[in-house]
Image (cartoon, rainbow, N blue to C red; front, top):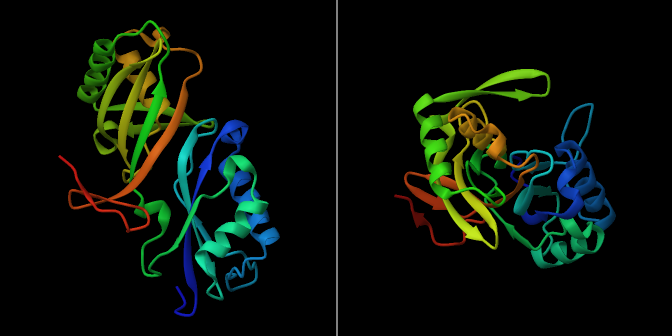
Length: 239
């Protein structure tokens, strides 16, 4: 990154109906909001000059999030609070940023740096946590599964992406908390993972047709510690 640029990191939700935006639609919507806010964004060099902005790994369409992140490179340093207030006025409510901090320009790109994700899936009523444990154990023993990405079939390495899980009852629904890592071949998609797990034990039809899923947190995993996206929170030891 050029030394005269400033890297401002924003945290924002992706909720309500806007959870169904594709990643391209999301980036376009945020880009328009930045322009309307009048932020002094930097542009890339070359023939096709574009806004200098980096996003976290793309969410599957229909998945919401408590906190997504993007880094906006600025040509002039603007107070982070002022930038946040301006962008909050122009962004849609379901994508409205709630925190902004300057971070080191030398950090790797967000998409690769934030490699640990926490998810919460609503598995609906009627399921038992022990069945979920059995299904995930069977899939981990199998080691991989195939998933369709558009019209292409992709082999997913479970051991590279799965970290841990837990279940809890919320009202009548069974909630699945899932921890994943960004592997060498991309992110582990939570819905594809749990459907493959139930298929392993012959109970694919036990899951609801539509699974509500939310990304609840993102971190960088650094030698056994979870690093906060703003590098301001205390690191947490990972067992």
